[in-house]
Each structure stands twice: as structure tokens, then as C-alpha cells.
Amino acid sequence: MESPSSSPSSTRSEQYRNWQELPRDVTASILQRLGAIEILDSAQKVCMHWRNVCKDPSMWRAIDMRNHEDLDTPFDPEKMCRHAIDRSSGQLRDITIEHFGTNDLLNHIANSSSQLRRLRLVSCYCITDEGLNEAAAKLPLLEELEISLCSFSKESLMALGRCCPLLKSFKLNQQGFRWPHIEWDEEAVAVAESMPELRHLQLFGNKLTNDGLNAILNGCPHLESLDLRQCFNVNLSGDLGKRCAERIKSLRRPNDPTDDYEFDAEIDDGGSFDDDDPSGMSDIDYLSEGYGYYEFSGESDFSYDDFTDYGDFYDFGDYYFG
Image (cartoon, rainbow, N blue to C red):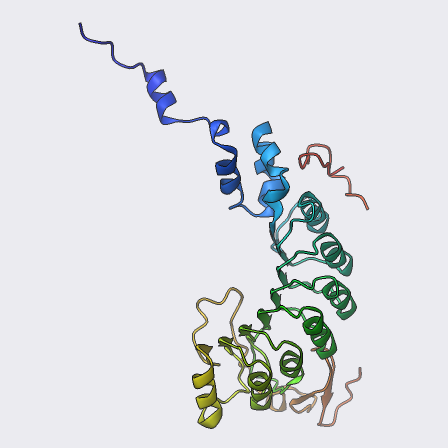
């Protein structure tokens, strides 16, 4: 006798599995592919099983808070970040904060995460030299640091290097430009004098000169990769270029392609202030420790708590925005 064919409902049940039946470690592996914002704002609200997985401290060993500055969100990313850090229960090893952040938040990271190995700060305009120095003093195990589209002084970078003797990878990236013409070796000297264990260094858009590059080669004898894209004051012809080629396994030159660079790599080639500025100001002599103070050599008149109430429907697991 012929066996009855499978019903449509049983066929569907075989095709579609219940996500709640996945092993906990598999669920955690899937959820960890999301960023912290997506986990807190969406994923943990799907079901109690996912919520419980999302509360496990092991889920928060890496926190990615790549917040877009133009993203219209109903929550405060800094307060959400604090909550994610607290969930890690001291297990945090890797954190990215982007387009937000203050000295208080950085200090909270340092106080809560003495085992931190990797820190990325991107467009964190409200973090000061003092805030960076205070945090660095509490992060002796830091191995990788990225500071992109932020500005800190030479003294602050040197203090950071001294406080983090295990630092192997450092990225200090700015927007590249040719004009106004600025030569500035202070950051390169800070790297050379305080980060002798570096293996990887990226200085995208930096204003260092050949002198600064020579200082880095002298002070960082273990350097294996060096990214000098859009460092337009560096000339790698002659002996310096030969020295880099012999010493550095992976060298990105000032005019190399930028296709794989994460941020905006458009160059401002507008020309010199001598030609374009009606006030008669000449090209800028760069004097300060940050990119904020300039002296013009031509004549000119130029002179120098709790979360806010978003409502209970923004429930981040065991934590309420409101």
C-alpha cells in the first residue's frame, strides 16, 4: 500500500526551522556579526532567547559603535555605549566609537576595561588631550590604537605612547590636502620617541616631512608596514625611498590608490591662498600643537545621568530609555 504523501504543513516545517532551537553558541555567533546599536535597538527584542544571549558578557568583548553623524535616532549613542560597556562586565577587549564620545565616556571605558587591547576613535571631536591622557594611563595592555579625523597634541601622543608600551599598531589619519601648504613633524616625532614597539603605522593625510619620516624609521626599528598615502610633503626618491623599501615590508606611498581607505579620500587641490584669498594672506606657517592656530606671513587684519525620556517602548533588555 502506497504511503500517503507529506502534507504541505509538514514540508514547510522541515524547510523553516525555529531560530530559537539553534544552539546558544551558534546564536551568539550570528548576533555578534551585528553592531552594538543593532543588537541593543533591535535584535535583543526579537525573543527572550535572543535577549538572554545578548545579555551574556561574552557578547560584549568587542563593541562596534559606528554611529553615522547624520543618522536620525531616538537614543543617545553615548548612553547606549555605556550600557554596552557595563554589559561586558570587564571582558571588553575591542571598542570603536565614531561621531560621538566625550572625556567622561573614554574614562568610563578605561575604568571598566583594564584588559582593553584595541581602541578606535573616529571623529570624536569632544575628546580632549586631557581626556585621552587620563584614559591612556589606565590602559597598559593596549596593542592597537586608531585616531582618525581627530586632533591631539604632540605631548598627548607622547604620553599615550609611554602609557601603552605594548602598542603594536597605530593609525593617525586626517583629511589629505595640498593647500594651504603645511609642514608639521610634531606628530611623527611623538611616534618616533614614544612608540618603539610599533609594527604597523598608518599616517594617512599627515603633514610630516622627510625629517619626520627619518625620525620614525630611527625610533621604530620593528616597523613592518607603513601607510603614507596623501602625505604630500614626503619625497621617497633617493636614499630615503631606498631606506623605506629595504626596511618596510608593506609600504603605501603618498600617491598610491586609496580605494581601500575607509574614509573620504578626496583631496582639496584648490590652490594657494596667495592666489585665491582677497585679503592678501600668504600660505600658512603651521605653529600649533593641533590644527587650530596659524600664523600668516603676509599682511592681514586677521586676528585670532540618566537617559532622556524616549518612552518605555525603547527597552534595551534590562535597561530602559525612559
